[in-house]
Length: 220
Image (cartoon, rainbow, N blue to C red; front, side, top):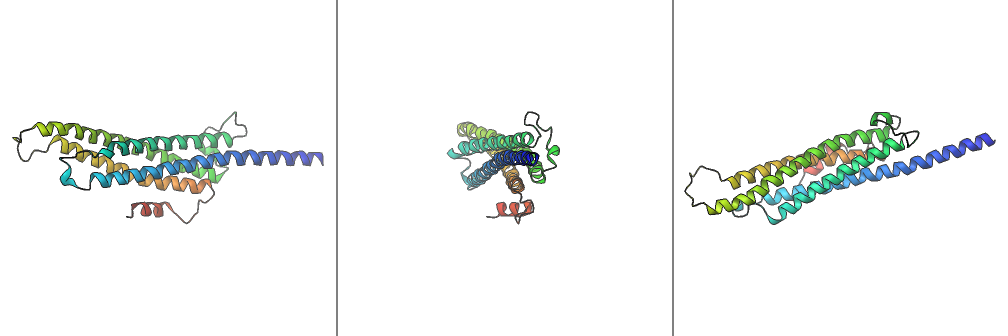
């Protein structure tokens, strides 16, 4: 009886430890998803602003809110990546027989399908987040350059050839293109983190598929 009681106590302790780290893991996955949703909203709103009236580009190459919005998007992407990294760290330690000797890779968590699936989707999401961050930084560079070049455009006497495109407008167009690419990656990113969140909570076969998520995000 004593051996049975001891075994039961060990099993209870194991379940308590697992429930603790899994709760922390799920929290980090949800945080990553939340940050990515914020990024999507910022980029979508920013793109609407910078493309609202092309006729005003010469006079206002960079709306006052542009730099703040892009800076916020870059920060949110950084926080999302940090949350993804923390989730992976927690899973590799929590899923190991001893936290002092964490598992080497997500493949070693294959015994827990939900966690393994969530980590797999987070890995894809991390690559998307990195790509989106690069695009956001490029957009910031181009739009910032457009604002500076506006001064040069104002100083010109209009003697250039009529088919020549001003440096300001060229930078603005490049910035918009980068912003579109960033938004495209953000759409995929939100879908990936939503799928990771579903997997983390055991809803890998939930009603909201990746394709459904993308369609929902792209709709007006």
